[in-house]
Length: 121
Image 1 (tube, rainbow, N blue to C red):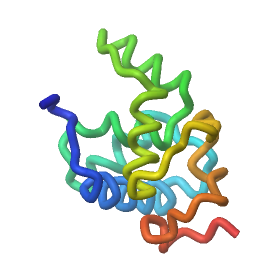
Image 2: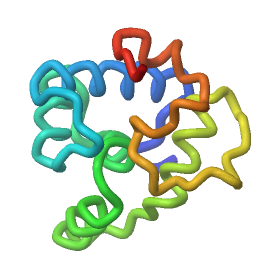
Image 3: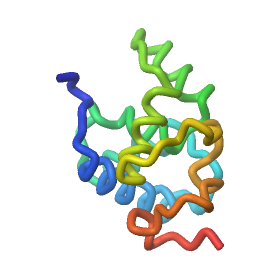
Image 4: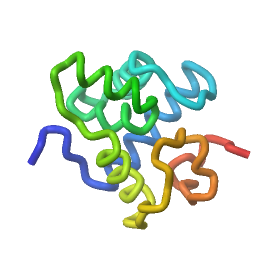
C-alpha cells in the first residue's frame, strides 16, 4: 500500500478541511498554488505524505506536474483526480467529466456533503 493511500471517507474529510482552510486563508480561487495548498494541509494537521491528494484537487495540472517533477516523483494527475472524484461522489464514474476543471466548476456534481461550508452559487 503506498504511503499516500487514503480511504474514501478520509479523503472526504481531508479535502473538506483543506478546502475550508484554503478559502479562509486565501479567499475563493479557481486554483491554488502548491505552497498555499501545503500551508492549508499543514495547518489542518495532515502529514505531508498525503498532501498529493490536495495538490491534485486544488492546483492546476501544470503546477501539480511541476511540483512532482522537481521532487523527482512520478504521480499521475489524471489518475489521482479521477480516483479522488470517484471517492468523493461515493463511487460514481467520472469518465465523461473534464477532470481539468477547477474544483469550483463541478457545480453539477453533488459534493454538498463535503463543501457544505462553501457557497458556490
